[in-house]
Length: 124
Image 1 (cartoon, helix red, strand yellow):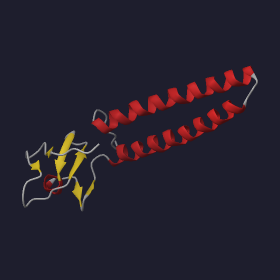
Image 2 (cartoon, helix red, strand yellow; image 1 turned 30 degrees about the vertical axis):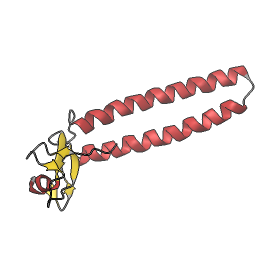
Image 3 (cartoon, one colour; image 1 turned 45 degrees about the vertical axis):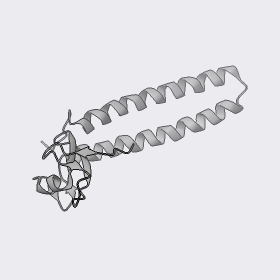
C-alpha cells in the first residue's frame, strides 16, 4: 500500500517537502515511521543497517520462511485433495491442512509481537 504523505514520528518531518527527499522506514525501536535523517542519527544505525535487536530480526526471517514453506505444503495438499476420491483420505488431508494453518497463525502472532516491539530478543 502506497502512502501519499508520511510523517516522521521522531522529528515530525512530513513528506513531500520541496527540496527535501527523505526516505521513510518502519522502526521497531520507536514503533513507528522514521525518516532517513533520524535513522542516521540513531545510536543503533551502522551505515544504513539497523543493529537494534538482531536476534529478533533473525527470528522474524525464520518465521517468514517457515510460513512460506507451509504455504507451499498446503498448496500441494490441496492439489492432491482435488484428485483424491477416497473420503477417508480427503478427511485426513483436510485435518493436516487445518493443523498447518494453526501453526502458521501461531507464527504470525509471534512475528507481529516481535515486529511491534512487544518482545525484544537479546543475548543475555
